[in-house]
Amino acid sequence: MRGLLQNEFYSMKRVILLYAAVLAIYYILGVFGSGLLGIQLFAEFFSAMLVIYSFSYGEKSGWNVYVNALPVTKGQIVGSKYLFSLAAVSVTALCGLLLQVGSNIRQGSAPADGIWISFLMLAGAAAFLSLVLPVLFWMGAEKGRILLILIFLIPFATALAVEKLGITLELPAGRLEDLALPACVAAAVLMAVSYRISTVIYDRKEF
Image 1 (cartoon, one colour):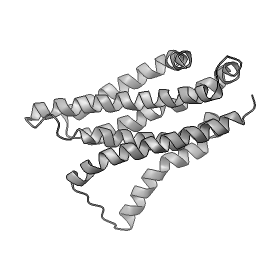
Image 2 (cartoon, one colour; image 1 turned 30 degrees about the vertical axis):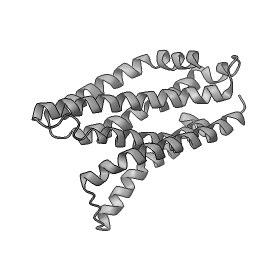
Image 3 (cartoon, one colour; image 1 turned 45 degrees about the horizontal axis):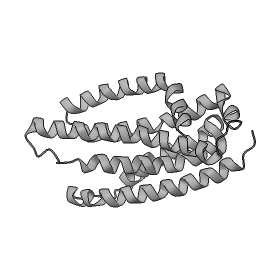
């Protein structure tokens, strides 16, 4: 498993550095502006897309065929993808949390104010990955592009529909803060179920 994870990070090193540079720019804009919430939302889902590039690289380089000849189980291969994607969104959430604390200190607020946002964003990204990863194991990054685009469009289409229908969804910050921990627990359960589904899908694939 350790070797599989090392391969993920080594093969994606250039892409990770590019993502980090883009996120650094957006985080700077968020700190000196007033849109840190929106920046954290963008950063989480942006970092979640790293796993798509990981699958695409594996398909083009022939790694998907080679790795199945190695003395590793299919569960470990699937698990390495999940750990890699979770590491990406977790590091991003941690950066967002630290920036939130820094912004609070700069504005004279309590350091812990609003840090629940980072946990809520992490839960959302994990739930999103629980949908995306089984599709990637089933169809791959290239063949599954259309389905992946549809998954990406779901939250935007839902928000647009709510706006068009004139539905008002107003939740006080305190209520959202209370939802952060249950959301993380729910996301963890979704990821566990998703991992099981992906393992079954991958176990049935032929290379």
